Length: 170
Image 1: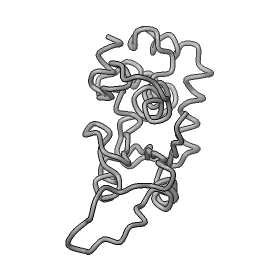
Image 2: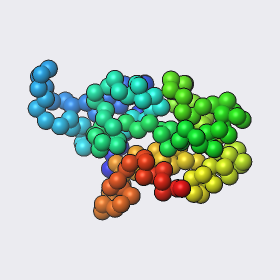
Image 3: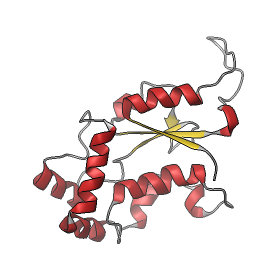
Image 4: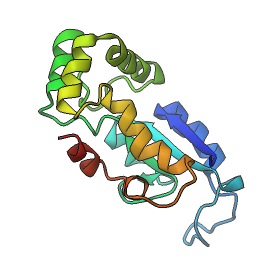
């Protein structure tokens, strides 16, 4: 396995930045090369607010193949999702609302709802082709796994676009 650091939310971004920011000297007007973390460690920032990730220059889009990158953990859930509607109706959480609680505990709570609610597992399984907990699966398969697993390039770890990930379940 390759080393990979994962930061969750705003505090996770700040800590992750300390590990991944380049130690090279750059001029304000010119960067001398790619940012390289010590030991070749890779990093990914998990967040749920796209307006927040747009303000930070160290992290680029996973979709664009940037390193270090960010992933919007709930992007796999579409606006018209039956799974989203179920969670909103039963638990009062809107998985697509910008600016909701971004703490790691909130994300953990969402994961636990998927783990504990048998009816939600069935709803998600039907919508996401057998996947009972789509958010952590998306984070792992498209975000973390390709950065940590040493293997030959395959279609799964070469193309990490969430739009294709979503379509594989439909």
